[in-house]
Amino acid sequence: QVQLVESGGGLVQAGGSLRLSCAASGRTFSGYAMGWFRQAPGKEREFVAAISRSRGFTYYADSVKGRGTISRDATKNTVYLQINSLKPEDTAVYYCAASSGAASSMRTMREGYWGQGTQVTVSS
Image 1 (cartoon, rainbow, N blue to C red):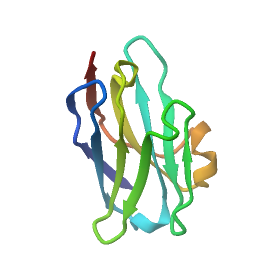
Image 2 (cartoon, rainbow, N blue to C red; image 1 turned 135 degrees about the vertical axis):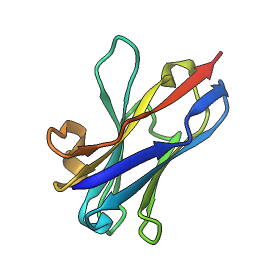
Image 3 (cartoon, rainbow, N blue to C red; image 1 turned 120 degrees about the horizontal axis):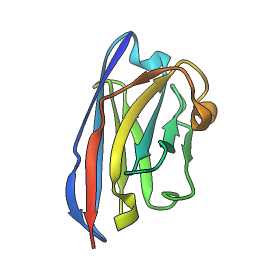
Image 4 (tube, rainbow, N blue to C red; image 1 turned 180 degrees about the horizontal axis):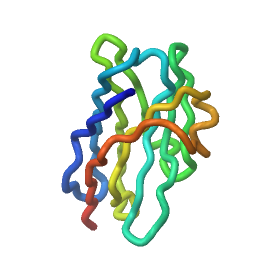
């Protein structure tokens, strides 16, 4: 069992930046690929970014590629998502996820662990 707690969401003006954090507890953090997803009102949850267990391979959705950076700190059992040049369409609830599968497969992740989410609102 892995518990995930997101933080760092809030209201940001378009063009600004935000760094989300996800603190993991429970089973060994390094045993999981970690990722971020988001869900906007009226839309399905979508993949944002993922990072592999140890080598730090990263994967991004086209919507944040070039603007987003996912990273993980094993000493703090925490994964981060930084998004720059925020747009109103980035407004969503952002969820942290942990998967025992490959980070490259998190885009279509079905099983794993999820946090409760943190709201990000980007004003125009």
